[in-house]
Figure 1 (tube, rainbow, N blue to C red):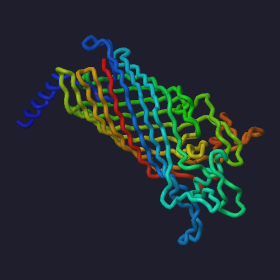
Figure 2: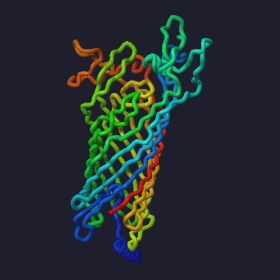
Figure 3: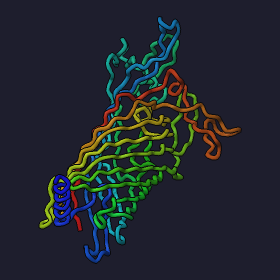
Figure 4: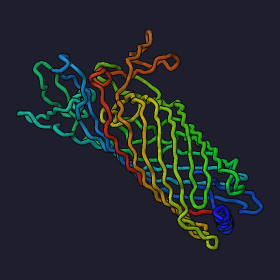
Length: 426
């Protein structure tokens, strides 16, 4: 009797599912074309807004004598707080090419990117009796050593006999805007649950981010990366009644372009040239998209997507981070992990209007933002110039930033993101 009830329920569930047109989870969905029993051509055009804010503590290694160990040890002391806000508008287009193969084009416009700094607890900026600025922040003091006199105010040396230094004028914010790096890609469903209910939906995708934006460098307002990014994605989803769990894996490989960036002189070091080498990225997304409402008569559909996000980012050379933006220079950033979650609401109205709203909360694990090796000078070459054909890993080393006991670490990262889009579905 019990087995008969289970079988009857399964048959009714399949009948209901067959009576109402369904679609794959959005993470594995593609625009199809040239199917006789379906629309001859599918496409979509969306306008997407993204907001992203990251707050992080910049902690500095300092040397402190330990009574317990009877020797000096390195500890991390709070120095500055950094907040980065990114507002961007994307134009996303997808076109069905043939069967379950689609072409994607994404155009990014950064309307506002800003990075601001504030003093951590017990850190202050004051004035000497002569009215010159003074601070107990070791990072700001080193900014004065690393920047040019035009970027700060001359301050009195805190120790007798020290040479004069320059203190940056607070709040020394950084802002960027403009057209970024566009993306093109292909998405393919070799297996599709909608066409064969015994199969999962399989997605194979390739995306290419083209360095179309003006190159971002410390001190300017450009937003382009100057790097070719190649991304491969593999994703599976399988629908069970009104829930469709999925898993997605992706890998991004950066290929430096011929654009070369000038690294401002730091202290006694001469200028150096280096290609921007961001780290490779490997990511994982695991989640489930639940159908809250769908109607076969008018084409309305509402789903709720909940997912976990994990990502590993490899070591980056010449990266723009809170330290390099403040110092108007380039640094080497240590590899790190990112973990977070996303909750998204998707609605399709009368088959032709698509609306998406999502929120993301994530955290970057603690890692050093100044992590350069010492490097070597080329024989007979310009001081600290990188030989792109050698095994030398870095020419960014500076004793005030990269020596153990002086490095800067990003701690307590909190990332909040909001995305909203509206589009036309054909």
